[in-house]
Length: 204
Length: 204
DNA sequence: TGTACATCAGTGAACGCGCGTTCACTGATGTAC
DNA sequence: TGTACATCAGTGAACGCGCGTTCACTGATGTAC
Image 1 (cartoon, rainbow over the protein chains, first blue to last red):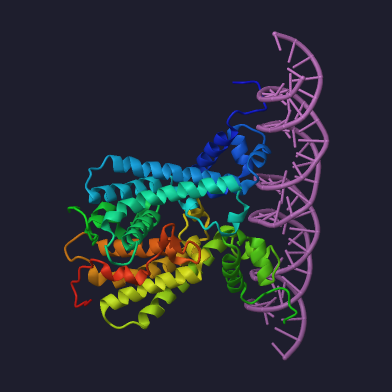
Image 2 (cartoon, rainbow over the protein chains, first blue to last red):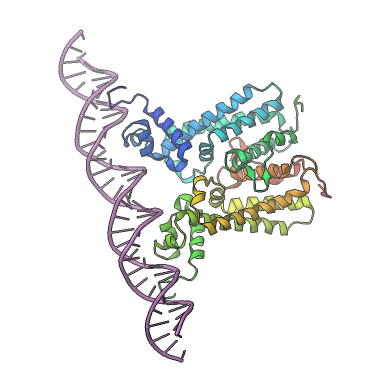
């Protein structure tokens, strides 16, 4: 343990990791500058110095969330076969795996940032846009083979994204693991019934 | 304007309406005891007396949200024809209409209440459960004609609910009205392609 | 190689703010007789 | 019908708390010569 109090080394990384941990433990309410600082072992004024305020720290944490999200989907895809349908199913399973393993963060990421956007540090905002676009692209690519060749653009993408996102929100976490009326069918039993137009060699 | 300062008359209703207004104007962060009280024109200690703390006031507001939600779906259903498919589409449009007209409230309703549940006033909790169950039943009934007769129970329900909920969350509000890649297809152009097994006289 | 100095990352005390809660109170309402 | 009294809804001042922000500072690092 270094005696030096100044020059943390990688304060930014430490703050983001602290924020991710706090988010999972106490939800979005627990994400404050002071708690992040305490968890990272620095003065409570340090995060306000590194980022320009709480908003940018939150954005940096969300950006990191998207990076993990993307990686989770890619990991699942890598374990599936080359068949486009299997690839798409794997991506969706990765989507659900992330939403379950990072439940609070997942909801936080898809929050409405609205008024806060203009207050985000320019470089952090750029990073956030990059990471969220990358996550989106993974899903988009997996849907591409199923887009109707001459129909409404992105309709499969919107269909699949809506379905998997809604399922994740409603049934994905530990809570609300059932409808008021009973047990929820496993997602894998729903997805294969999709009417995905295949303009490729996708098999059932 | 009555001079009497005590005995508001219907403080409960006034507080709930104040809360609904605050929610739409400033999001969930704006929902505090003091702001609700100020908006309802009462002392800031009044809401803490009427409900036993902020948590139960929030729950009462969510319960009211579900009541409006149910009514919105029913209103849309009433304007559709008797065909089961038309009814289901109408319910979904009602779902989306509510999520758009009460964007912040909608997200707040589907929040994870988790740790807060035990702290809700018993009668308010009962009301919340009643209203949310009623909303759920409207959707459930509309899906019933399409449930596969011998398949997995509630699979159509889960499918439709996930799809419409995900669409509402991702594209329903004013914000994020498009995918990163472009324009979002209208929901009505997606839903009719559903592979809904009809054990009824539902027509396309 | 060694010294002087500028830069910069992080400190810690202090500030004001809005919050939920508490509590002795007040004044209107309802009830007993 | 009228009076006494209990109940109860809402008041308003006070409290402590955690928060984000500010600012003069300090000590480590990097650079010029």
